[in-house]
Amino acid sequence: MRLIFRLSKKHYLRAPTKFFTPSGYKAFIKPGTTKVELNSALYDKRRKWCGYMALLTNLDLQKHKPAEIYGLLRQLWRIENNFRMLKTDLRARPVFVWTDQHIRGHFVLNYIGLVLQRLLMKKLRESGLDVSGAELIRALESMKISRLKGLKKAQSFLYCCSNENAESLSVRNEKGDLLSLQELCDKILNACGIEPLKDLETAESIRRKFHSRLPMA
Image (cartoon, rainbow, N blue to C red):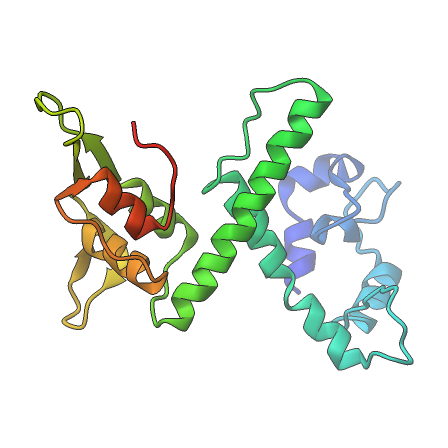
């Protein structure tokens, strides 16, 4: 028996109780003995329930069937994925504020960002573009808008619009080639009903495309 073999290793023979733990195969060492012995009672008890899983829930069993409750458990990964996105994509941690009010505000803003990110990802999936949260942020952050300086007329501000010269990590086109970040960014803007930016834009054209009246620096 493999369990007996593992328990009979030389270092367990010296001091069996030292290596006893309440979990794992070491739990089957009988405590208080001077030699390696199998705790048969515990082994038979655990073997009886092998393959079974018990769920503790506060849901009304009269309204929810066991299969439905188990289905909810299988969706737990979605919650865990949201926490992962908060900590990685949205950089919720580390927190560089220390008052209670500032900490609450920090996490409220992160939660709003998570909701907006999830809504945008849903909209992109509906348009046929399946993009991860990290890839979405990377594409949007690659978009740079900078004002060209040195123009004589103050009312003739032009803005240079560009993207980081890099490829997407996972999104491919119909030929199977990885999209550039600019191509991915344009697809994201199109899916949101926003006209992609050209290499040169005026302040008015940028406001028109983004449906915004915010001042341009």
